[in-house]
Figure 1 (cartoon, rainbow over the protein chains, first blue to last red):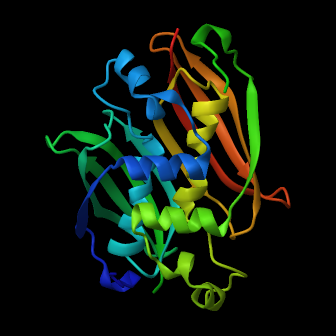
Figure 2 (figure 1 turned 90 degrees about the vertical axis):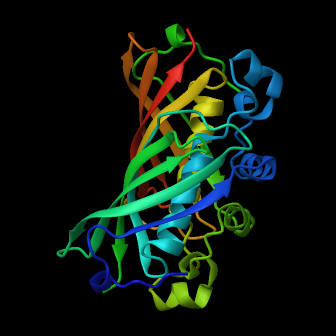
Length: 138
Length: 138
């Protein structure tokens, strides 16, 4: 786990990691949230809607932004203040994703950093783009 | 599960539900994401930072917006296009939350609705506010 303090972070710093959206993650996410929508739980329904397999919950994909902030950038001394994400392409169960953030702003008044975030799939297509404001201890 | 089609939804429609952020949810979220940040996993660390108990992952709290869209409003025929959320107050493990959305815009060109969302705690204090754009089948 990274442990960057506010003063150790410069604009332009990047961190990223890879994950695979598994059926087990989907099952756990459904148990947590109770979101039993068939697009995410019924392959036949998903296929009838034009997908090759169940579609990942968008908010499951977005959950890895928690890991990006809490483990990678800035890591230990972070608290997420706000998140905005566009789901620009569907994520299919089994997809390998790369989650990445880059510091594009530092606010010295409030000790916050602004990350530009993107998540890309195995074909290097962007599936999520967004921004995240994070408080970081001095 | 609600099954509203685009044409059945009017601006002003509201839906909501209650949940409790449990330790089990926290454990499952950590297993999914690998976010082992101590603010969410180490009560002593959380207390040292001024909290009464572990702090809920913001993205876990936000995960219930998946349920709001996929089960309640509009329900079955939905696909989330974008989400933006501000975490305006920390959520502590054990907190009872009310998750609510209200349709504030319909876009007839793209069959999308815009929800204003808020999540409040047991003291009726807002912990999350945001917006969510959702595609809905005709």
